[in-house]
Length: 490
Image (spheres, helix red, strand yellow):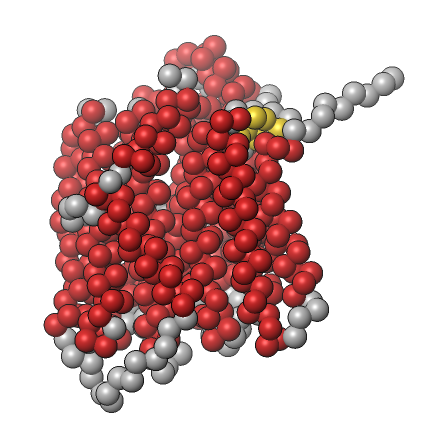
């Protein structure tokens, strides 16, 4: 009996291959470099990310490629992969000086960062539940290690253990939900699940409902939706700040990419049900995230609760379940990658200016920053205003599109709640600005320390992008519109 094997179209995952090969090359090269030269590994790591981004551009007009019906390179995955690569590139720039200063093992650090990036990119392209789960585990395992990589800091190890235990628990929910779907449909392909639901109509088996519910729990953990968010503040605080910056954007993009394919493609036949489940989760996530952030004085914990609230905002757009909503989700994830990673980069800079191991983490550490580092304070102020949703910055447009999509879908109450939550968030974001500009630094006189040029470049890129795409959003919005039109078959 002759066995025929279909040829693999590796072009479909060429960007992922480049990033993963770069990770392996970095790991191998690092073995032969002396410790004092391992900081240079950042540059080939960044080069691999930029080459992968160039391949995205090359594939844009050749999209809708598939790899053994397991992965699909379409506009949906290409655009989200662009965001992930932006987050990875910024994280590498932030790490050039920071990784050596806090004594992270740089060879392992950059390799794991790239492997996690690969998992995120594969997750956006997964059209089969098996590949989706494998990609999720790839990004998660690398992040578990990255979170605990600062062996000199006890909180880092504690955060890694908590992330590992709760992450494994959520993966169990996700895998069990997938098993229930497979038991009913007999296939792991998202398209097969959709066809099965269309054939059964309103008589959808209970196993599919249970399977979807369990998978929502797993995805909810990854993107930090309430009530699956309890790990977020401790992990964000304990992890190295550059890792926190990366995972705050990257995991959200990967998680929402998978959640979007599962709900809008596989379970589109149950849309009238899951819309209300997601609407309730969005309302809880926005509200609890913002209220919890109000009382935080530790900036990493404040930004952790802020990221929870922003996950709720993004979920508003996904809940709309229309093209306008997906447009808004894509645009918001794009600008959020700049806003949030940039804010964490300022904390890295503040750490450089301080003398204690936790310098830059507390609100008081930013007091008087406008006097000693005016450009750094201005960048942080722009990012805080944008996260609040102050016009004409990109964060304002992002929230406007999200809430407009909810109104278009008839979820007016959810849009109103989103606006009210944005007003609440203004308190803790603007408190940072007030501290920088209106409070003097206590203690000894601050001696400005030199900042790494790569860190300065990363912060400048984040701040400029926030302003640029607030004033001239057409370039990204046109790309987003083309992407979502092809996703919905329009």
